[in-house]
Amino acid sequence: MSARYIAWDRHSGRLTPRCDLPGSPFGSRRQAKQAAHKAGIDKPKITTVTRRAS
Image (tube, rainbow, N blue to C red):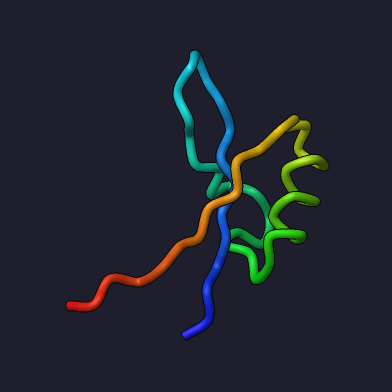
């Protein structure tokens, strides 16, 4: 399974995942960063999303 990436934004000092961005979760860090900048998020934190084994 390939890794997926999600962008995070700061709201009132807390990090909030931006799952509402078009194309989220993204296939690469670059895509996540570009979508975050289009949405007006400066300095987004990009993290890896993995599926938990059950």
